[in-house]
Length: 290
Length: 290
Image (cartoon, rainbow over all chains, first blue to last red; front, side, top):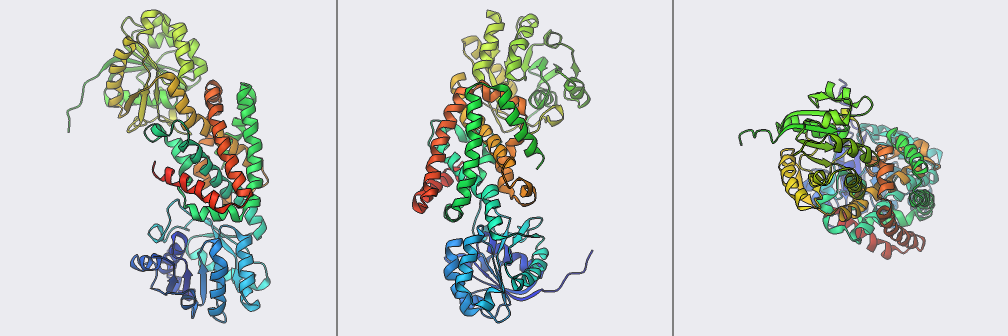
């Protein structure tokens, strides 16, 4: 057993205290990686996060939360990034670093680039924790949400690369495994692994809900449908923004999927048992190997 | 606590000892609902089922397993039904009932109708346990596979209806909840709840496996992709047969899905945030309510 490690950050500010931000705050407190964790959130999330013990203190504005912090995580949706980055730019300490958690990186990077001053830009590191849930809000936050999960960082300048090393040490205290990837590569990969599958499952739920057999599904569907459609219950606003924001990559991924669906339909229509079996056997072998 | 109930069946024969047949045999033994459980299976499944304690005895032929049994479950794939029903017809006792477990009912019923004599036909009850797994074979069998699950029966004649009542009592000892439904309605519903989603997930796995980002998926995909694609690892032969056998209903269900996918693609391409949000919000609300 290793001795408890000391704090890596004196004062951590988390902007946005939903599932991801709340879990970052909680992980930082529980792991002792930050001496003090403060935050800011819209609606009732700040009060809830405080009541749940996710943070030590909450502030009414982004600037008040960020001021005096030596490290800042932004855990807000992509559309909120421009305004939040403006507020961060006005209050960020001289040596503090800032990282975001947006599921699409190109737009998040553009928002940060537009708002931050040159010396602040060098202390910004685009990031993305690969952890989530169909649940949302502070009450869904868990200190162990990132344990055993990947966390991607996309530093673009040497200065960002140097901060990425410090952030990596912090994220490892949360139990995450850090990899580095460019923002463009990130967005193409996550269109394929996550954004397109979400769009597809929302479309599946839309079709079945409006189809002729929706009434008895609840009583008769097996675990298969429930697993396949689980992400269909995900937060609508968040996922609409992600899918729209990464629209070109999502459409490219949907186009490749469409070619596969067309091939399956053709072989089912032709009752081409051998042809269909060969597609399904390849798919099944690949999935079993994941 | 209720006193242990006595056996409902003296000698139960199970033909096919994979995931479903093995679980039926095991549930019948563990619950004490059958005094003796015998079986038959192809390949090495009979020996495995015996070694795993799922059955008391296995036989080398369907006829030997069925002879002397007062109840018979057929847990074989649809394409095996014609030959298995022929063998059952030659050996079925004068008062014994027989039920199948096929995931598509119209073809199973046609096979039984063609092979069984008139008096045997009246003792046949089409059935379908709504339980499964992406795993297969006797080693995946579990005595509690049906606990809390639905089991559909599709009796077509008054005689079959009378046997369905006896089978229902047995299935309730396995912990299952029995409903009755016509074979045609069954096949349309399960195209929507299960067969189309399986075809879709196989197509999703096919597209992603052959796409440009397959290499890093294993390290980077979150729980969402894994849940969505879980049924993509299902047994290829079994699912090819089910999808081909219920092809018309699967194609009709895929056609409805296609209309939803087209609508999603159109709104993503047009960056129609409000239009996309309205589709996703409806889908999410519906899925969360399941």
